[in-house]
Length: 407
View (tube, rainbow, N blue to C red):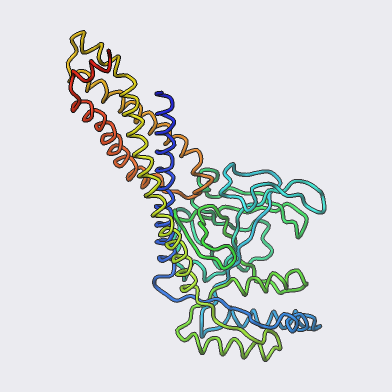
C-alpha cells in the first residue's frame, strides 16, 4: 500500500514541478521577447515579388553585379541603419561540446564530398552595426573591430562565443572548423564571450539564446557565384533596419531595387509586432492550459488524501492493538503524521530528481532557481496540509470506535 501511495505522490509532484517549470519558462520567455525590442522599432525587408517574376529577374546575366550594388546601397546608406545578420550553422569534424543545446542538428550529417561525419553547431554571422546598435554586452574579452570585418586574408578569423561556451574555451583559444564550401579545415580565435541570457528574435529561427551560439563577423567580399547570391538573398531578408522614418526608408529601398530591376515589391516587416505575436501565442497557450492544470492538481490532491485515509483504515487493527497496549492518541497521531510526511517528502525528492533529468529536453533554458523558489514552499505546504488531514481525521475518531473495528 505504501509503495502505491509513494508512486501516486511522485507522479503528482512530478506533474506539478514540470507544470511550474513550463509556466515560469513561458513567463520568462515573454519577458525576454518584450525586452529585446523595448527601446527601438526594428524592421526587416519583406519581399512580396511574384515568384515567377522573381525567377526571371534572377536569370538576368548581370544579376550578380546588380545584387552587389543593392547590397552596398543597404549597408552603406546614411539615411537608415542596415544591421547585417544571418543565422545558420558551422561544421566540425569532431564534436567540440557535449551539450545538445549548442547543436543545430542533434545528430551529425555526412558531407557529400568525403562522406565523413560532420557535427553542426549553432552559428550567427553579423555585421559591424550588430553590437553597436543592439543591446548585447561582452562578459569577457572584446567585441569585433574594424579589421575583423575587412581582413579577408587572415588565416585565423575572430569569433565571439555565447556565455555557455566558457565551460569549454578560454580567450585566445583557436578552434578548428570545417569549411565545406572550400572543402578544408580553417581556424577561429576566441575574441570574447557574450553576457548570459543574450536573447534575440530571428526571422528564420524565432527566439534564440545566443548563449549557445558562435558569432562570426561578415566579411566584405563581392558576390561572385550563384551559391553566394542565394546566401545574400537570405542575408538581406534576415537583416534588420532601424530608421526614424520607415515609410521614406522603404520608398528609397524600393526605388533602388526598381532602378536595378531586382525585387519589385519590398515592404517593411515590423519585428516588434512579430515579437508581440509570439508573446500573445505563448500567453494564450498558458491561459488555455490553466483550467486543465488546476483540475488535475485538485483531483490529484483529493486522491492523495483519500489514499492516506485508506491506509489509515487498513491499519485500524494495528492502531487498536497499540491503544490497548497503553499508547495514547497523541502517540498514534504523531506516528501517522511522520509516516505521511516521510512518504510525501520522499515522493517530492524523487519527483524533483526525475524532473531535473527531463527538463533539459523539454525546457532547454528552464529557470532552475526560480522553479525551486516557487516549488519548495508550495511542495512543503502541500506536504504539511495533506499530512495533517489524516491526523485530524484520526483525532476526531472515538477510541471505542477504533477498538470495535479492531475486534
